[in-house]
Image 1: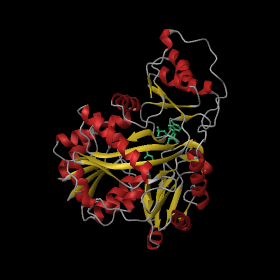
Image 2 (image 1 turned 45 degrees about the horizontal axis):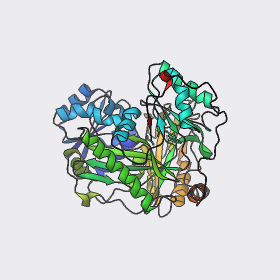
Image 3 (image 1 turned 90 degrees about the vertical axis):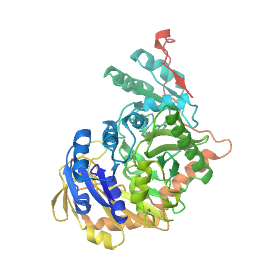
Image 4 (image 1 turned 120 degrees about the vertical axis):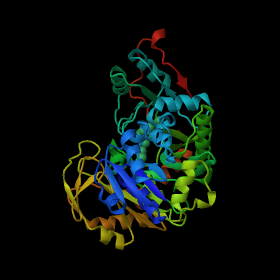
Length: 468
Ligand code: AMP
Ligand code: GLY
């Protein structure tokens, strides 16, 4: 089988590598010259992967049997719609269904309409003079989310990105003033996890759960990023995630797919739920309509025994053979090597020297992200994530140690979070959840530093709606 992979980052490198392991041929449409993809692909087009016309033209000339779309940009611009119209079976929802990721407002309104469980308390002000009232109705610490795509970087959480609620309100107002749409959500306390599933007409098929590290700096400090690294556990649960809680999260995914279908959206692709495990169970933070990056790298590394090309074709054509869903029982850790300052003020242009053969001969894998090859074993960093190093082992901390050891084969000026997958970090998270779930525990200990004491809002200042 011959597949088109759309996108040029480490996640797409992992998708292509998994297809090639299944003896498929891969052609790639991406804007950068990713050395990992170049080594695997039988043809590459340096084109804008968000251009439906260019991507379809390339798919046609290459005579592909199917396509897998990696990033959200092409989903948002209708590349999946265009490929389907050109009779190319595609993994990735149409633009309308991808709104579950591209419009947080669409997502929350859909889930509220169908009474899907596991939602936070939220308010959607639509005018600047509704924001203070929206903050007041939430009645506690809150989170400000631009509705549209922000590459994981637009969300402001009280206590991390701002302390005074007025600052959060000002940020929300600034989004509205610029013509954007904004959501305010109660701030949840708990541990985050990602649960991805293959979704097609025949069902919703979960992958192993993963924990992503979104904050740029160690100890979960610094700005939100696309993800600095991630781990998964041998039993496909997580140190703090029970099977019952995972099943609840899967139930939320299934209900959400039913809601999409009830609105007339078919969905053939990956659905990624970002959840917070809280005292009241898993609560949905967001959906993505694609593999997570890096989470996709964790799970695809475990997909060795089945036939991934057949699985992708099944998702794209509506019927998955469940026997193809086999993920090895191993723990994984993925860490991203990023430019210094990444997350706040990245310094692009530095060169990395990578001894990939040495890393691979130690049994790990290297996936190239937003880098350009400048010579054998040398890549130039952009202001995005550079390379991902993936290891597996029987325990998470062992996989983490293996990635750390492999960093000696990467030379240059870079930053990496050393705390991902350490025993200490895992113990801290497990203890955090133990405290939250303890009988009588009081979740969300952070008090509002300033009570919104302004005059009661006029009727025009009511938030458009309160859900949850
Ligand atoms: P999102 O793009 O909605 O996933 O938000 C990005 C990050 O912000 C999440 O991964 C969380 O770390 C944080 N976040 C989002 N929503 C909430 C919430 N309601 N409570 C606490 N943290 C949140
Ligand atoms: N790692 C988070 C994401 O892929 O959006």
